[in-house]
Image 1 (tube, rainbow, N blue to C red):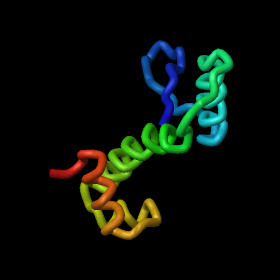
Image 2 (cartoon, helix red, strand yellow; image 1 turned 180 degrees about the vertical axis):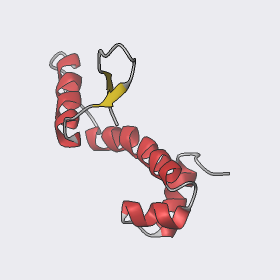
Image 3 (cartoon, rainbow, N blue to C red; image 1 turned 90 degrees about the vertical axis):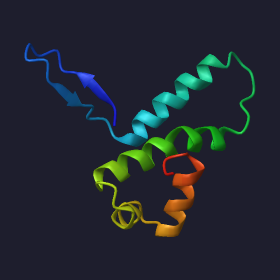
Image 4 (cartoon, helix red, strand yellow; image 1 turned 135 degrees about the vertical axis):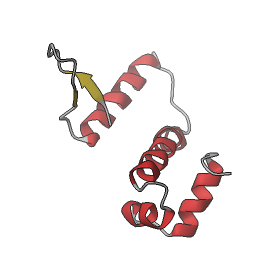
Amino acid sequence: MSRASSGKPDGKIQVNQKPLCDLTEEALGSYFETLNGHQPSALYELVIGEVEKPLLRTVLEYAEGNQSLAADILGINRGTLRKKLRQHGLVN
């Protein structure tokens, strides 16, 4: 979740109201601009690698460590979730 300062004197933080797809397009647009004409490589793996770990960590935190609930929220099998958690070093 992207957070931006609201500029309010109380210091509260507001969640960015843009859809995730818009934020993704903006991030990728910025990424392409930094390439200075060079050809990107393995972009799919790069994006998934950047997004998957925080996604898993945040959903697991939301589910209060309950892997079955986290798997249900993600729409994946609990075994798949456990495999991905191990891949990203999120479980012992």
